[in-house]
Image 1 (cartoon, rainbow, N blue to C red):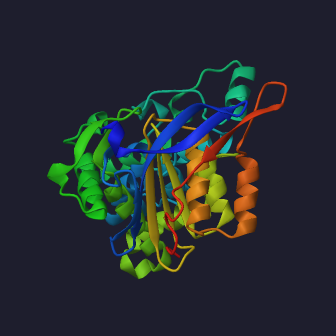
Image 2: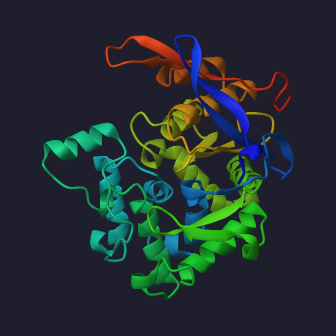
Length: 345
């Protein structure tokens, strides 16, 4: 990954002067696999991080494990989540583990404070420490434990790249992205599970396949089941006030939105005339101000959400920057090239 692969796109201003900026690479892929639009180098190699979660969950359905353990639709949604650690998230994560007698002590994801601010405050008020259940990946790890048992693997080594569950996940990631499994790089994610290194447009292609399955479940029933679970339970995928959840609420059943660490974002959309997969990477790894601004700017330029829904989202993720006295002291601006993306719909 080189700086030249990214397009200067986001400026942060104060007092009428640019104070900071973010560069971005974008890939927009149609359901048939064609790259429709790119910005910067649309094929720049990236780590997918948590944007891979819907596809890491897919072998659970394809192998029959989801049915064997009677996983519910909310449970499948949480397995795909980067959840906020709210009470409902912990409840569903516990239920996933209990499907085969596992407990939070079996999770190898580590513990961190809840990602949702209110949940983090509540935990502090109770004087309690976060557990592995609060980890935003606890649902994913619960699913991996179930898949490991189903495939005859050792739950103690379920994260090893050579474990049966991880081999099945790699094969699935190769299929949906169109990248040979031997060409998919692997590293260790923040939760200790393998994360995948592949071209940005390959990640967008995987999301285009997800969008296609969402629009026509016959094309890939297992992937459609994953997509519908996420679409039906957007709160479980992220949480209160978070971008993934709010985007899916804005177009029920028509958008799957999924963040990844270090400035990764991906969306599967059926809101236009064809299924689309969009993936972008913010070069400096920004996780908040640039990512939400870029996601909304792309949806506006590509005309993939109705104006009232976009306006509501833009109010919830304002471009104005406020100081601690609630005064507007600057703004965030996304400047797309003039003709970019016109005609996609």
